[in-house]
View: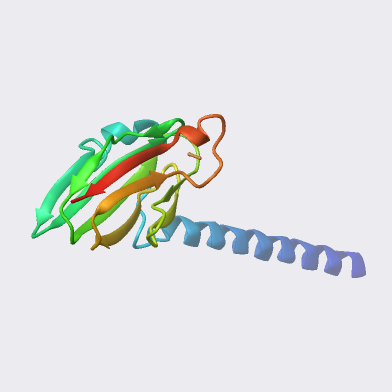
Length: 152
Ligand code: CUA
């Protein structure tokens, strides 16, 4: 008789346990994507908006979108040029591994994660030549990863 009770207790616990897992999985599946990042397929970055049209785009009064893709050995943008005082919205993704995106001398510093759109906005008040670097060790191409933004 005691055995039967324990069997019932055991089965009930198993059912509760499975139920919790099921509800948890369901809740996770239902979770809306977090506001700032939408997921993209890293293998199809160059076919996915906005990365299908990379580069600098003027979107307002001295305001620009800079759409870029990081990959081992570089960024897909050669020298970019904006006027002094320009506000630039960087949108960047990676087509392979995790990279960094840093502009020394500014507070622009973010991780570039494959499958995510990473973004950051900066206003370049001082003219000059700004180096854009990868600051996350990403393999043999790491030291070659740089490009330039010119602020005139
Ligand atoms: Cu990319 Cu280091």
